Amino acid sequence: MRFRFLIVVWRNRAFANFLLARLAGMFATQIQAVVIGWQVYALTGKAMALAYVGLAQFLPMLLLLLPAGDLIDRRARKPILMASWLVAAVCAGALWWFSAHFATGATASAWTLNGVYAALVLFGCSRAFSGPAVQSLLPQIVPRAQLAQAIAANGMLMRAASIGGPLVGGLLYGLGGGGLTYAVCALCFVLGVCLLIPLAPRYAEPRSTDEAGGMWRRFGAGIRFIRQRPIILGTISLDLFAVLLGGVVALLPIYAKEILHVGPQGLGALRSAIAIGEVGAGLWLSLHPFNHAVGKRMFIAVAIFGAANLVFSLSHWFWLSFFALAIAGAADMVSVSIRGALVQFSTPDAMRGRVSAVNMLFIGSSNELGEFRAGTSAAYCGPVVAAILGGLCTLGVVGLWARLFPSLRQVDKFEEAAC
Image 1 (cartoon, rainbow, N blue to C red):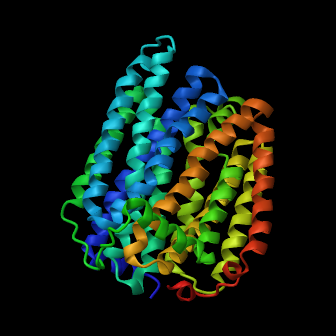
Image 2 (image 1 turned 90 degrees about the horizontal axis):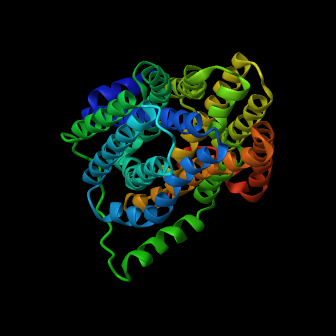
Image 3 (image 1 turned 120 degrees about the vertical axis):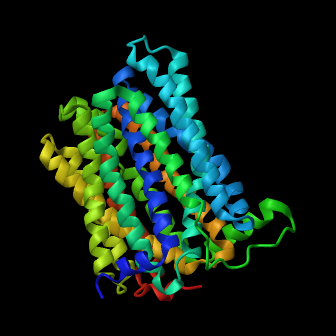
C-alpha cells in the first residue's frame, strides 16, 4: 500500500510523538537560523560576520560530539535529547535578550555581537548532544522492517518544518522584530521536550557495557567500525565534502539583499525554496519508496544538487533562484534519505551513538563550517564567484568519490548494507 507509512505513524504512537517533538525542534531551529543570519548581516554588512555565525556553532560541536556519542551509547537517549532541547531554549532566550539591543537601534558594539556569538556557541553545545540522540532514538521506536519508510517520513516532515520555519521567521521578524521570533523558538523547544515525556522506546537493544580503556578507547572502536565499512565512510564523507564545498545557504542573506533585492521576507522564501523541494521529494519517497540501485541514485542526486547550486549562483532573477534552490533541495532530500537508511542498516544499535556522532560531526562540518567557508570566500572574492566555485567543487567531489568508493556506487538494495 502506498499510504502504509501513514498507518505506521498512526498505530505507533511513540513514533507519532517522536515526529511531533522533532518537528517542533526543527521548526525552532529554522526560525532562529533565518533571523540570526539576517540580523547579523543587516547590522554589520560584512560577509565575515556570517562566517562567524557558522563557526560559533561548529566549534563546540567539534569538541563535544565524540564524548556525546559515547555517552549516548551508554545511557538512555530520551533524557539526553530532552536536556539538550532545554539548553537550546535557554539559548533562544539569550538571543531574545540581545535582540533588544538590535531593536532599539543601538550601535553594534563589540559586546553585543560577542554576546550573540556566545549564545550560538551554547546552541552548538546543545546540538552536539541532540543530533546523535535524535538519530539514535528513531530505531528504538520503529521496528527494523519499517525503518526505511520511517526515515523517509521523518525526513519529509523535517523538511516541512524547513519550509514553514523560514517563512514564519521572516514574517515574525517583520511584525515584531527579533524578540518575538526568538520567543517562539524557545516555546517550540519546550513543546518538543513535553512531547517526549510519554515516549517509551520499545526496540532498544542492550547498551554498550564495555568500560575498559575509557571513553577514547570506546570511541576508537566506533572510528574503526566506520573505517572498516566503505559504505558508511563513503556515504558520510560524500555529504561532508559536497556540502562543505558547494553549499550556498550562508550566502542567501547577501543574495537577498545585494543581488536579488528582496529583503528579509524574500530571504525566508529562498530558504523555504530549499525545503519545498525537500518536502516534495520526501513525499514522493514516502509514497514510492525505492530499494533498487540506491548507491547510483545517491551519486546522481548529489550531482544534481551541485548543478542546481551552480544555476543559483549565476542567477539574478528571484524566481529562477527560487526554482534552482528547490531543485537542489529535492536532490538533497533523495541523498539524505538514502544516506540515512544506509547508515542505519549498516550500524548495530550498541554502536549507533558513536556512529551518529561521527555522522553529525561530518554534517556539522558540511553545514556550519561550510557557512564559514562560504562567508570567508565571499569576503575575499565576492559572493557570486564563491558560489560558482562551490558548485563546481561539488561536481568534482561526486566524480572523485564514485571512483574511490566503488562498493558504495554498486549497492543495489538497502539490505545489502546490513551489518
